[in-house]
Image (cartoon, rainbow, N blue to C red; front, side):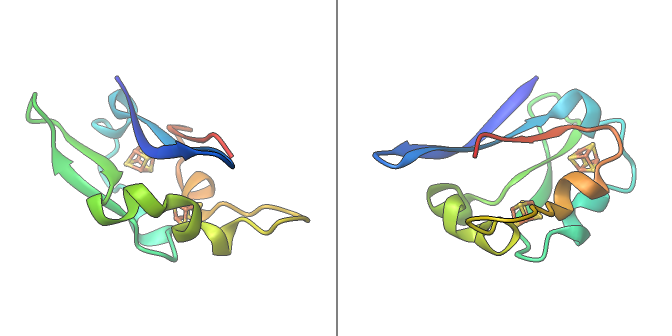
Length: 93
Ligand code: SF4
Ligand code: SF4
């Protein structure tokens, strides 16, 4: 399943999508430690699989929570994606 976290407003779509089928196979969940803003957390989903998602308090301000990884110009270095070997994390912006 692809879980989407974020929002859209007049300036664009700001969503992080996480492939939970990959997460539940990922024992170490290194993305959580890698994220400098600490916005990722693990939890048991409806099927009792342990997966990762965006913390509730960041979902409506995710554009700002992720800002330090996403300069307006220049090279992007997304620590969450770099840490995720299964390539389970996608960003819309
Ligand atoms: S590293 Fe990737 S696959 Fe592993 S828990 Fe994080 S998002 Fe899921
Ligand atoms: S882009 Fe940066 S702040 Fe946002 S989830 Fe990934 S590592 Fe965390």
